[in-house]
Image (cartoon, rainbow, N blue to C red):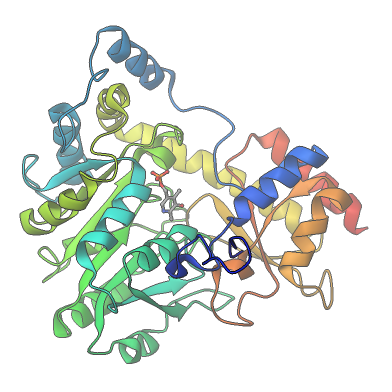
Length: 396
Ligand SMILES: *Cc1c(COP(=O)(O)O)cnc(C)c1O
């Protein structure tokens, strides 16, 4: 919504941010509060991460580590833990001093990357449905977003359409895999084709990999930066929030070449400068958890996915099974003929006592997401079961 000033006065919100007034999450979470509905809208776990990691934060705080401004690039313990993680899971070598930057969550990393890398008018190609901060960050940097529409039922990117979307003004690809909200995970063949295109057209790539460990059914996440020709043109972004179930801590990071990391650090230092001091030490310990932690967490989430997917199907939703992330995208066309997702979601809390989010607001495309509704399954099994029961009752 456009903020307007007094009569005759220029609108206070700058034109670049027109239409980006309030996020759908604020609207739907307010509805959840007002109606007492179960909130499967916003993607945050209702159980905190490992007790040992929480205790590590308490210890850091008590010991006076990180209570004052930490170093701009991040505390050395965390930068080393990030490089060890990249080595352990992907065989990637990064220099903790020049090729790693700790940020205030992936959100700040995305914003800092857009502000650092874009000139006004530069085009940015991103999958739609978009993660909601992408449009805003591209706009704040004066860039132009160019959507590559992911279509149901499998949401695979159309690589010919991607190739055709590249123009002389294209500066970068902003890629998210595992993809929120569809749960699509890029395959080895898709990654290879994207890397080849980026090299051929000399594009930068920013990869949002916050769900890197949340993949199911044998799907695997591979960082695009590990592919031939990508090491010096990719800004690889991840975060502790989703992997360790501490979304409030806001510890994220960037890995990449010294030149790209220095560019992102340049803008980041004037956004927050630094953040999350004591939590940085705790996340360093979290990253060093054994492989079994990561495997268990993915298995636990897959079980929750299956529980909610079965409940949604029983209630009449068409379910698009996600290969990763916290989310299930559904289609309501058969369940609520003629209804669009936004209308459906605005009345769902009242009708069913459940909050969901319309994917339609994450598309520029006028119809592709019209009847898509997203549910988060990073909740306790009994909460998911109760939500499923309520939905089934409301649609009977
Ligand atoms: C949650 C999320 C983020 C934000 O991560 P933070 O570390 O909380 O800032 C970024 N991208 C995607 C796709 C997300 O789902």
